[in-house]
Image (cartoon, rainbow, N blue to C red; front, side, top):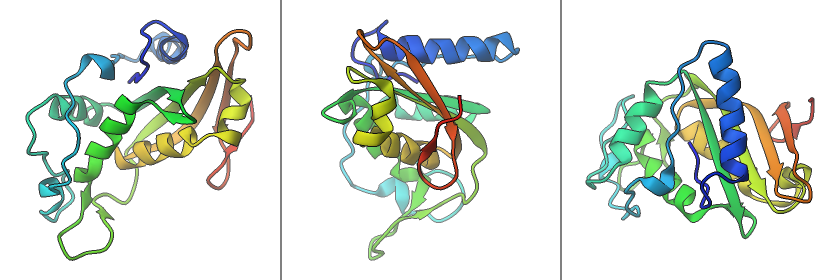
Length: 187
């Protein structure tokens, strides 16, 4: 999935490089470009979070969210990529993330939502790109935590993260998920 505003830019290049590696190992891949999808804002009606049980609640809005989530749920792994605006993910990525509340059970009267599934069933690679050097992304921005939260909501465990930078720092720096909540550089 790419939430890049500029198609074919740094984020798309990094996501495509990861998918190419997966294809070389025999995986079938598909890219969802969020800017090409019809995604409404969450209205916080929480209809999707009212029914208990392990299955994701369905959003009442009629847009492309259900199709996107069906594709993700059918996958063994997901790549979540976003360029950064003002130190975090793009607005379209944030819009998508805020619509994932159906992965939680949150009846009215409860203070916090409860995840429907406790264990991740797929893997995730997280990609953030910026005009700043890629190694600074996990140090000085909110993008990594937003991407990790989104992966968790989708039932995916982050196994790697990449920070990519625009020129003059054009380099993709990848990290394997380290112990704890931070990223540990390893290659």
